[in-house]
Amino acid sequence: MPDSGSLVGDSPNYKWWALTVVMVGLFLPVLDTTIVNVGLPNMVGSLDTNTDEIRWVITAYAMAFAVITLASSWARTVMGVKNLYLAATFLFTFSSFLCGLSPNLNVMIVFRVLQAIGGGLMMPLGFTILTEAFPPNERTKAFGFFGIVIVLAPTMGPILGGYLIDNYSWREIFFVNIPVGIFSFALTFLFLKKDPKQTVVPFDYVGFTSLGLCLAFLLVALTEGERWGWTDHFVYECWLVSAISFWIYLFSAFRVKYPIIDISIFRNWDFTAIMILNFVRAISLFGRMFLLPLFVQTYNNFPAMAAGMVQLPASLVAGVFMPLVGNYAARASDSVKRAILVCGFGVLALSQFMFTFLTQVTSFYQILIPQLVFGLSMGLLNALLSSLPQNLVEPKHIGLASTLQSNMLQVGGAIGVAVLGNILDHRTTYFMTEYRSHITQGAYSVQKTLAEIGRQIHNGIFQGTGSPTIQAELSKIVHNQASISGYNQTFLYAGLFAVVGIPIVLLMRRLSPRTGSTASRERVVGE
Image 1 (cartoon, one colour):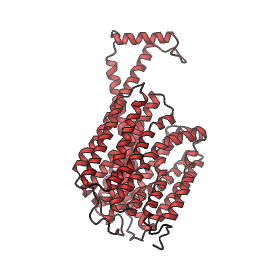
Image 2 (image 1 turned 60 degrees about the vertical axis):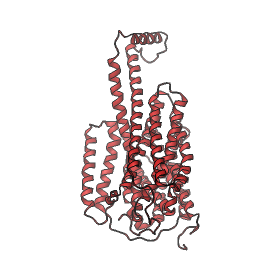
Image 3 (image 1 turned 180 degrees about the vertical axis):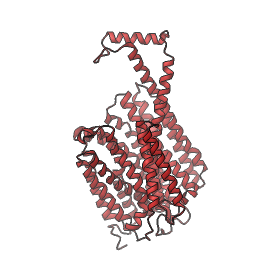
Image 4 (image 1 turned 90 degrees about the vertical axis):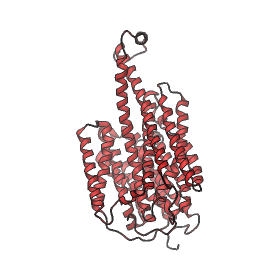
């Protein structure tokens, strides 16, 4: 293709160069979902703000990221995949530099929104690039390799962020994006083909605005509800705006010729099922990444960087198995793919159930073995769940499938953290009430505990600014045990979420590409 702008042209190796471009590029926006969290406490003083307001650095990014993905299919018809991906990479990299220079919170939020616009366009475009570079029967193999980014980047965030903050400053967590972003831009410019021009359709302003507001306020309600309480007036208002915006979108979607999201795509049950499965996967992946580091930091006294390292074994195991499973599944029949997915969700549930026995003196192997099992489950699931959305739709809907898949990961992750966090709070409160009801001064176990606490106070083991009372120490013990029991049951619920995926897999009719999917792509995206 002489005007492709790619050094490799029509070489049979082009698809692997495209995979390299996407893996390098998308590592950054996925990494940013977790690396910035580590730096929030350090930003408070530098940006002259407080711990409540600094969370908008995360919330603003999540909102803008989810909203802008909606416009990615339409934007590629205007600019083409290569030009849009280059622009998005430049915007993400340059805004990362600006974030690192931010003098105050308001400026930081503006630059984080710009960063999210770049990342939010890169994510679905990356899925589309892989889908169009690889033939249908090889996409599972490609997404097996790409899945390493989805699993490894969020894990590397707390580790890399902790190292940079401990040795340099919080600004380095943004500056680290610059060399990788420049490298990604160069790879894209040199090796990615220009795609043929497409018919530009009218932009659905009403649909984009209403669905964008729905997603934005949904994410705010989920993230702030956990912190402020689900009955807070502001959270209720967010739910209300999100619900009204959604109904406005539904009303308009049936009345415009080119809706921003063509909901007719959900008439395909197999595609809808895969979206639900991606949603369940996101809940387990991001919910676990929220629960486990929080537990080991609170009750096992792990420092922040070590808590991040806890996630690494699972990512390494997943990184080994994903390409292997993807390569095998690319040649497998529907029944074998179904078996792989069922096993994957079963192993995922098992790994969550194994964490229902955590204690305040959890051993190394009590954490390592479930993490290895969890990594195996991601290795079984990720390649198929990432490639099937594009394989199960008509060629004209490939870009739309990529957009929806990206949103499922974003919204599913937010809901996973919110739902599991809410379950944790409720179960901890329940166990606190339950354990207190069994504490009576006459009980032998209570008398023994009180005697031991008294002995330790007498020997000076409990030290502080004031002399702790025996009753206060007993209350502290009860609260700690209730919290640990709350974590155990929350992991149980996380496992049950994974079990939900099994019947959905069994109800799917088809897991292979549509006949004729190898035909040339239609020139209108998002119809």
